[in-house]
Length: 203
Image 1 (cartoon, rainbow, N blue to C red):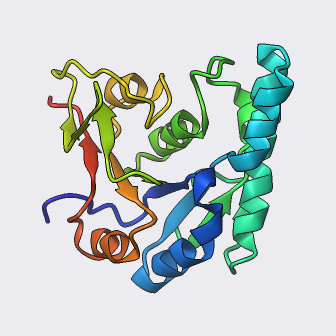
Image 2 (image 1 turned 180 degrees about the horizontal axis):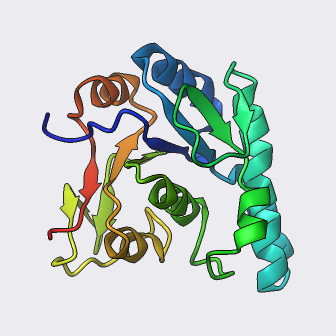
């Protein structure tokens, strides 16, 4: 298999995909894989940005925004969990309790649900799939199929500013795929091929 082969990955569904979230969930269910779904923050996180509270307050409000989107996703028939290490079956992770107790990441808008999902993947020892509204990650404005620690990555805003360094530093293999292309997403889940960008440490 050319790419993804983890049998219990972390799948982060971006909040921008709320309008097609049900279809994405159904494709995951049809694939038969076990996975832990991490919700994005979506419109609720955008409200936090507009309110512009201090960094600590914004961080926890944004994490709670992820939980709101998680409850929305659960309406498509996927159970909720607060256990980041559960690997059997399909579940949606509510991150607030675990993050509040361990507080593992800086409080900054440079860190969003992208890096939170990477943190979850790291403690599980799982691959990470970022399901987004873009075909791939751009570096300096150009789409790239692979990012390694040897690349001079210049973030064009498709992932948060902390994400790529965090993934590479912690040896997490991550894939970016477009959730608005159901056929491509389905092919990726079933075959490991068809992702937009793979982020992987080269040693």
